[in-house]
Image (cartoon, rainbow, N blue to C red; front, side, top):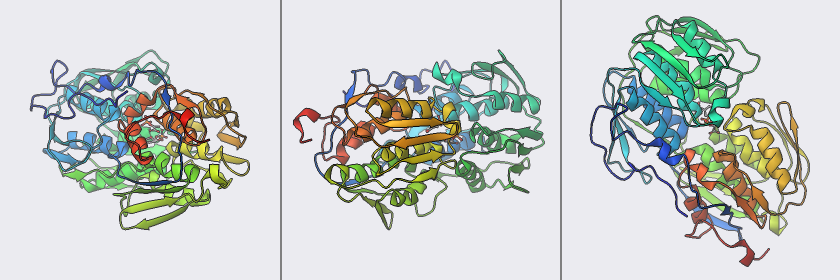
Length: 480
Ligand SMILES: O=C(O)C1=C[C@@H](OP(=O)(O)O)[C@@H](O)[C@H](O)C1
Ligand SMILES: C=C(OP(=O)(O)O)C(=O)O
């Protein structure tokens, strides 16, 4: 069993114009089938942890910076980017549209840097895979290209809501042909320019609708005045991240009132940026300390960040962990761990600001000392899979009792037993299965390779956290 990496990872890609027929287009799809060796036996922790880890770059930051670098007024470098399926798909899509992207040597532990050279944008095709950032950000870039661009993705991605992107483009004067279902596939008929202007959207299903529009808005002829009309707006930190990434490139986004963003037409400056480690992907590792006991330290934690994963520093203490920050090292001390009499503290938590943290948090709460709720996450039904149904089903399969609410989950801890955890091609479901399997003997995850979406190194790092070089272990031989 091995960790899949896309083939371009360890070699420099020659600087060639990035068109679809280019043999050097990064094969994002190479990561799609993931590890096909059958179920992964989740390693059981055989004692308290004492792990020190560093993690690869943030998906959300890497994919924003790729888009901004592609639309910028000159070439620039992204240092320590994430190399994963989602970023490979973003690179592939941008190259198809005419952006030059090559790997260059860098000082990152997890792969080369990226050099991006903006080019004339021409219509092509975009494979969104299962990547929300690719599906919601690139069609807006495609609208700036000359000629039609077809947009499609994985079978499940065809269920993820895209109606707001499609209608927004139409509202901006861009022709889009689709079958009326508001999902992929569809075709954006770019004319080389977008008029822009005033636009009202309901982004309650995903903040990515807002981010996608804001990222490209400086390039619209009339800029953009964007108004969110829905009752809720999930993942606000991700919108803050978009605004901060734009600001770092000299673009001001005004917010005259909550839910309204104004971007004047202006250049996006080419600047070199360094990507922070992915703090949402830090979640399962930090959470592991609470279940297995002992400590997990993650290095390279930014002092200031827009990443919502930073919330783990406040969430995990509510669940009973002790969190200390020493310089750029974050340590979570889980005490004894649940198998040695420690507890996870039951709590009611609203995760509207960071739905992507919910699978980790809900899995921890299945081990709590009482019932809990996780709310504000109705939009997770439109994530990689219906995460509310998936968490209820998989924790239920292990003997847990999880009730689906309209906007969340009610979790009643029960003694758990082993079972075949399904990942539904969802990286965070896969890591949640690994988390439960740390302390529940006999958990297998059907598709651990799906972690390649944002963290191809997951099995390797999980093994490292446990002090093992192997990615799996034989739970049968370990003390229960
Ligand atoms: O813009 C982004 O990078 C993201 C925004 C969020 O999407 P939603 O607002 O759809 O939850 C988040 O869950 C996703 O993982 C990444
Ligand atoms: C919701 C997520 O991803 P996406 O960017 O595909 O929306 C996620 O990573 O949890």
